[in-house]
Length: 451
Image 1: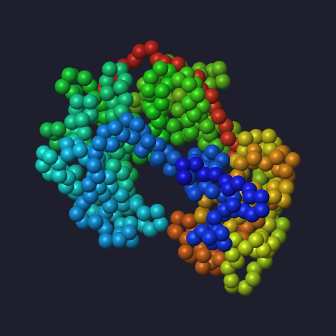
Image 2: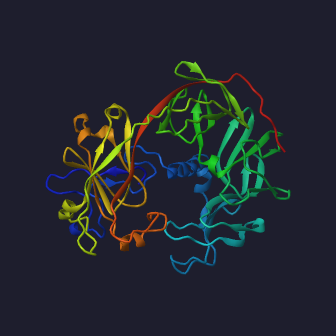
Image 3: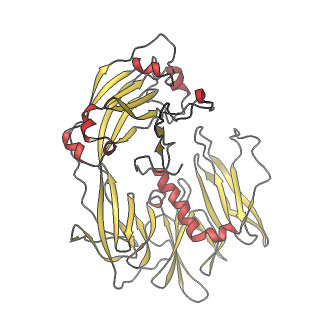
């Protein structure tokens, strides 16, 4: 799923998959989100930013990768549950390639790997990556270039992930992001490998056979997830922003924030001006990038009240089956009071709860539900008719201790319950805003060099 959604309503029954309708698993009645990169109501999640790095790489290097065949090591994991064998492989055309590795599993922690070194067989012989063994932290994954022609400069390898390339000011630029916990090391042809500190400046500059400069920029893993490459003011540019960016044209871009998220916008190459609400934004240099500071959002402080109307009725030690509609008459019930001022805004309701399954009703009608996974329960208030915003009701089936203990560690409540538990810890109303920026190209400028 790239973007989550909701099941439509059936005329006679619910349309969700369930064991009762012949499917292997029970799924929520309405929710069809699956923690997708984009939520059903436009929520932008961290995995969207991580996935964008792959898409940017494929846009600039996909043609190269498509001609490369996959190769796998002789030592393969004996089963999917094996945690002792590092997963890795190579895509190569015999001359160059990309090394992929994975030490992450979504439900079980894998151990750190020490003294790792990859031996890759190319037409020219065996290449060791890196030159000296290194450690791979638990949870790390990524892919690295090997024997890559970077605009006439040969890169034997880099222990950093390639994102994109850019032509600007008569120079070539290659952007990388560090993999968390791994020191970036670059080995250029006929040179000793050299490490570097991730940052916003140029890590290395080399000249190709024609004497043109080729620059290498290595961002931290955090800044890498803020990387965008967009056509702005007549040219492709790199933008660093943790927000969602929505380009309308080469002269206008919208920057979206949710709640108290601070808007951030830094560009390379710089622009002559960026205007917001008819006012020009000042500039601030951040390494190669020019930042255009934006005003922080003024977030209303109104309290969103969830009033407990009825506690859950517990039936001994048996765990209720939330797929049985009769169970919902005995759930805990809260009335959610949304202040009138919030009803006029582009608002996302975010409910933090603990329970087995939660359902939200408006006007007595089911509008959303969620299986508990440790993440909040989101719903777009703009989907509810204004006349029904005063009728919101939340129902929660208690989470049984035996089910809580089976959840992956990242999804469990902070304190495992000793008895069936249904509670609401807090409710937030998050306003979604879009800031419209008008951009104009710069006239000229110089770019600092590096080692």
